[in-house]
Length: 230
Length: 277
Image (cartoon, rainbow over the protein chains, first blue to last red):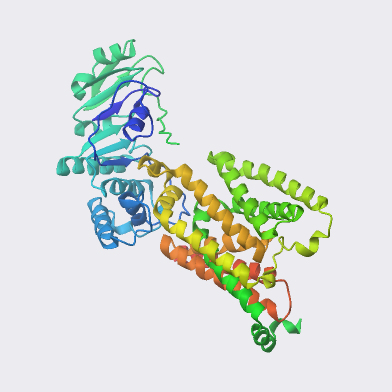
């Protein structure tokens, strides 16, 4: 499911609530007791001098939140981390300093970091942002592979639906407290978006891509949103 | 100057009990500093360590004034400083200026306390440059207990602290209590700093808490290997510095800083050569 909407529409709040970082001001949220959540953040360049290899980043996703030094279960951790690294094709650079890797390589490792704990749900916060087209495709294919192979649900916050359009089952479009859920064909229409934005919006399909045309500034701000987790 | 490399005299001096006590104290301190160092480097806390160590001096001065042991005062001073810095500087960008503000005020207080002290403070007050040869077996016991506690707590919070230090956003998303962890770590650093202040002195705590780890992080990106190297570098600097200073009677600090600085330069050269290869 792709989550779309202008800045300030609540995409971030939705993720924060699901991650347990924010309380609901109203309404209720139901989650299964032991729901495993994997989280893929925006690509933000890591400090090039950081003392961390690619595999350490993945390893933190496995048990970085547990107390202790982690001497027990070292063998199993190594196996799980190796499997996750293999599943995203990161064997070649997993032992290099993570700060020196390219944005695309770092984001591959981010996917492995989220998958290593075998999650039931993947929450992705603009994971393709600032990646070039080839890497955007590679990373979204990796996420889709997980979805089809393990049946993991994917919630994908994005301000740009086109790179993932062929992979999306449903769209949640949020505007100013109003929302619409449905297939891309149901939601991404001039009628639905005009109703959501309460102004005239034209949705045009060109060569399989969706282009949203509206009043200046009303739609699809160029500014990506930022997940504030402090 | 010809005494600088008088090895016979060095070996002779090594027979003294107080020299051996000094070396044991220094070895414990090197271990602590070496283990904490990589976290200090990855959390950008060098200035914070500096601030904490100066405020240990203020704590020592306050203790002198009220007639308590200077060592306890230093410990209290640096823990309070660590907590204040940790609480005031929750936001990353403010961190730097908050340390500057607290550091200046704290040192001002220290000057006031020393002025108010009726006796001559300088004799009892080796906190600025340390008095490693003044270590007795009682303080070695205190040092060991503190070291065991610090290392024990660190082992318990090791993985989440690592997560919070190198990847804070995802750590928070995974439920790691990053705020409390930074406070706990700040206190651990405060305790280690206070111990360091009494041996190598406030001015030189950085040489042990930051330089060896900074050198190690230049050489390897493997966190475990960085910790081991950082401990080795810290031990070489502090033990080597003390042993070299014995015969010529030069202040310990001069050699400790020189050795750790040389190690750091060598590490930079190694990483540069590797990057070029």
